[in-house]
Structures are given as structure tokens and as C-alpha cells.
Length: 416
Ligand SMILES: Cc1ncc(COP(=O)(O)O)c(C=O)c1O
Image (cartoon, rainbow, N blue to C red; front, side):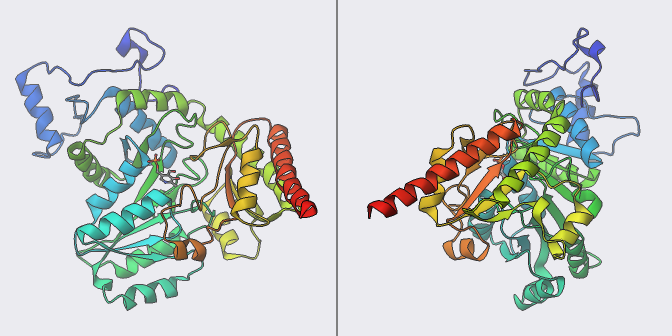
């Protein structure tokens, strides 16, 4: 993460990759320019030793390419496409692999922005979508697809696991089996997995049957709450399609965004490991608190549950995202949030500082109310992204905010 893909002698011995703030690149000769464009437009196959030369920063740029090469190492992917946001990565993948008339199968819950894109945009362009839930079996999902009467149009499976904000796990291998069951000789159904909650350290969806893995790089990969970005990884042919659409949508990440992410990658592993360590301690504290009804955390799964089996097979850490239900509802949850002193009340996750928010009224505010109830995004739910701070400080803050939130309640009761 510090040196791969960059040689200091390329840039005056600079130890760090310089920021290549340039929109365009000079060609040595007109023939060279022509050869690069032939490759960029797929007019001919690449020779074995040939690399796509630098053309124009909407197509490629050294900061973009070095970052993409480094990200490939974590997921053992052939290639990677970095975007200016997680949403641009998600929407570009869905637009590339779906067309009007197709049916998309997606897991629910999913990040509110993704839910909106699927349910409010894709349907406008004639793509039907059908959601499935974490507790559904393979047979139930297959039956549900068949009951739509559109099973022959199933074209793509999109899953987010662990799901934001409930930490529900979706079995990636099961989704592969579903994809294979509906694939035909002339149609192979692809699977994309949003691995933002776990990636890239704690789960490798490409090893569990996914064709593409997607990140909001704004989260752990960026990790400092100072950049918005996204990434998609997979085999060379699929990423070529994703990059081609990215070129024409023009939603690639800027050199500055990539430079910031290169800086972030150097500490990615130690940040994530510290966050996971802290999260275990915070979750333990929450589990024993009288005003906390339920803790949704991968480290607290019931060992006899299906989720635990998936966790053991497909994940190697309990991560650093904790959601929990408080006694009461929105009023109590808001009181708790308003009394926090150290933990910041803000959306986003995966950053060095701990962040807390109220999914029902914030990140998932746009999700249809009946669906929110069905998937457990209730008014008493709080989502916490654990940072790298001293865990004792975090526990102290949660403890004092809980005390203050419910103290007020008690005082009000006495007054009444
Ligand atoms: C799981 C998940 N996927 C995708 C996104 C969208 O990413 P971005 O905000 O970088 O566009 C988010 C944002 O919160 C997210 O939590």
C-alpha cells in the first residue's frame, strides 16, 4: 500500500506519488496518439506487452491508475475502476449491466441512496426490481422470482452485505447458486456485492461467487471523512465495460481524490484493525446496558443462527459497525444522540472518528415506511461507526449520554 505501482525515479525521486493535476497528456508522435485511441475505443486488441498510454484524465491519470492497481491487491481482482462517489460506482454498474425490460434481484435492506436509485430511477427506464430479505431461503427466493412471471428476464443480482444499517448478512454463495439457476447458454447472470461495511479487509466477495465488488471508498478506504469516492473491482472484461461507461458518464475520480485515497491506503489495515478492536469493547458494553434492548453486531451473533454460519464462512472480522435499539422510540434515541460529547452526530462511516446517526430519519429517511418496519429500520435504532479513539473514552461517552437521556425521562415522570 506504500510503494506498489509507483517508482520514485519517475518523478524526480519523490517518495510519494505526486499529484498529477493535468487534464491531458502529450503524445510523443501522432502514431502513438492513434495507437492509444485504438485501444481506448476497443478498435483493436492490446498486444501482449502493450499498456494503454496516458491520454486524457477522464480516461486515465497516474493517480487514478496507481490507486486502482493498489486496490486490486486486496480483493485479488484483475482490475479496478475508481469513481467520484460510491453512488456513481453503484449506478454505473447497474446501468451497464441492466437494460429496459430486465429484472433485477436485490437484497433489502440496502443503503438508502441505492434503494432510491433502484426503486425510483431504474423503474423509470423500464427495469423492474424485486427485493429479497436476509431471512429468506434459496428456495423461497427462487419461488418469489418465478411468481413475478418475469423470471426469464432476470439479468442481475445486487447485494449489500452486511446490510446498512442492520448488519444483516446475505449469503453470497447462495446468490451465486440463484444466479446460476437462472443463467442460460446465452445469458449469464452477474452478481455485484457492495462490500463497503467490510472492505476491503474483512471480506472478499470475489472469492464467494461475486462477479463485481463495489465500495463507497468514502468509508474505510478513505477513512478520514475528507473525501467522497467509490470503487468497483472484478475481472478484466467486466471492468473494461464499467470503465467504458465511466468514460462517457465522466464520473471517474479526480487526481486529487485519488491522491487522498493513496495516502489513506497506507494506514488502512491498522485503522480498520483498531476500529474492530474498539467495536468489540463498545458492543460488549452496550449488550450489558439496561436501556439497550438489542445490539446488532457481527460479534454478537447467535451461534446457532444462519447468520453465524454465513459469518464464519464469508467474513474474517466482526467489523466496526454496531447498530442498537434503545428503550422507547425516536424521542429517546434523539435524546441519547443529543447528549453525546465525543462521538460525532453525522452520517457516513468507517472514519477515524466515531460517527453516530439515526437511520430511520437520516440515511434511510427515503425508504418506504412499511418497508422500513419490515426490515427493522425502526425509530429506536441508532447506528454507530466505531473509530480509532481510545475505547474507554467512547464507552464513557455512550454511558454518560445514556444516563442523561434516561435521567431526563425519569425526572419528567416524577414531575408529571
Ligand atoms: C453501504 C453503502 N454503499 C454505498 C454508499 C454510497 O456511497 P457514497 O456516499 O460514497 O456515494 C454508502 C453511503 O453511505 C453506503 O453506506
